[in-house]
Image (cartoon, rainbow, N blue to C red; front, side, top):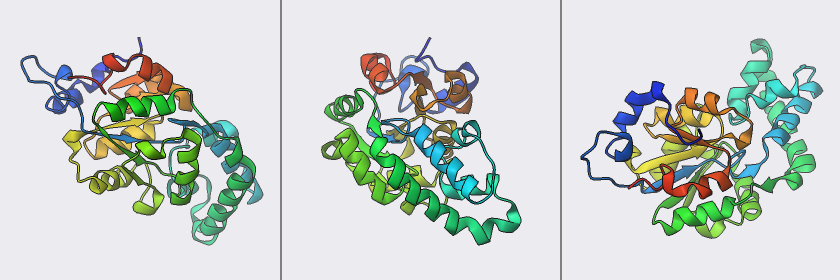
Length: 252
């Protein structure tokens, strides 16, 4: 059943009993999170397959053979994490900047216009906002792309702050982006909850002591997200919105 915590992460849930008492022992006065730290790609917009194909084409251009499944499994990480997986170490320093530029150019030229928002992405953010929470983007995307995504989701009026690859020395699954996002609104981990679609989101958030709600619309299986540390998993923004009152976003 979607939305149920992973038993193997019971200790993790106990650590968040103050912020999410429904996951902890009875008798604690409940309160909800103050800040939602949300990913974009694969979470609010349907873009993971497009990113994977752009990376596959990029590596092909540089004589490195990969397939779509291999690339899809790395989406959610930044180029600093993806390139070392596929490029021989001896060539990384020489090729890294050229690879990043080529991928950026073809993604903007051939794929950006094809990105659409998942159903109910804006409505979910509206629900979160109306509950009194702040919303902060925590994405490995480039800063210049956040404005485009804002228009696609129609969410600019709902976002309080945003962090991107420009704010982090290391991209997901390192915790830099979530740390930067919290810093922008002066929030502590116990005040926050993350929303993402990949194991890399969950792993990065855990490194900052922030629990994560997972969505499978980015292409990962429910169990993969639970194994990575998600406290609950839903299908997509519409499913989370439909079950909002039963989710960690509304636990009081």
